[in-house]
Length: 313
Image (tube, rainbow, N blue to C red; front, side, top):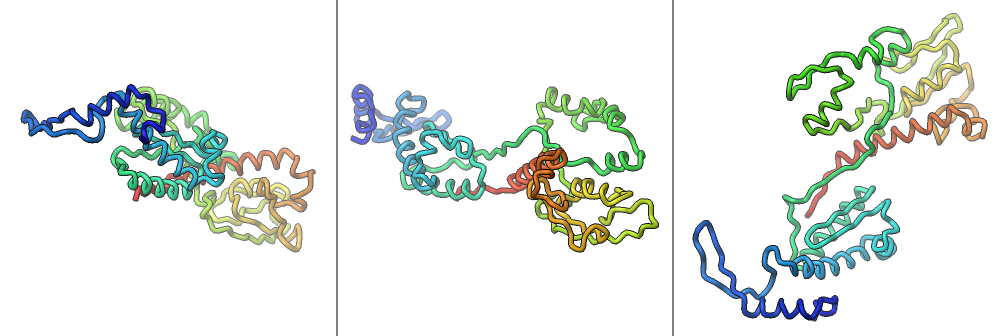
């Protein structure tokens, strides 16, 4: 009756009824056959009716599951309106759950496993795959070596680094460093895109530091107060932009500028006297800072997503 309510054609029902009433199944192990027995449920492997009947159960479970885990009762997920945030395709015994929120993903997965178990279906753990999608390339910061070269002129240039001879460890083939990523992808089938490597100062878990600077006027150039940073400034105005690029979560207070440290712009993170004025928010400096901040936040989200562990229950 349930199959008829879901629109299963009468001719297909006529095929299933004799199969369950009269068909016998003979188990086989190696070259030995067992005793035949009657089949009163299920379908033959490779049967055309199998996926169609399976969809009846899966459709009922998934629709009820969407009403529980999606805020609007599952309407946006069923109609595809929330495809940018939620992707929930199911067909027969295959399904996919995609979301930008790892906490919601784990909660929804736990509820779905429980509902399938109530329907007599178990999740195949060994065949379950987890995949993290992220942009192909994320430019977050210059390396210490490149910053040192820009400041002091020491070290090889980016063009010289690209021409450096390297050997791929799997085949020991020597090539230019610039050709390594193409070789990995075309010859060995390995993705050339790697997870972004962020220094400690760029991680979201970094503890913000507040630096106080009182430079004597007798010095021509002042060192950055952060230990290990090679940057030097000749005046206050030249210090804030490099500081936010190298230490985005830290703050600095130059006593010659103001009695209190300047506030940070919520859009780009730069410390300036009036961060909310249009003269700053519409400037090229703020626009570049927003792009860098967006890339940095994306890289941190990727690293956090890579640490997530899915539990099937």
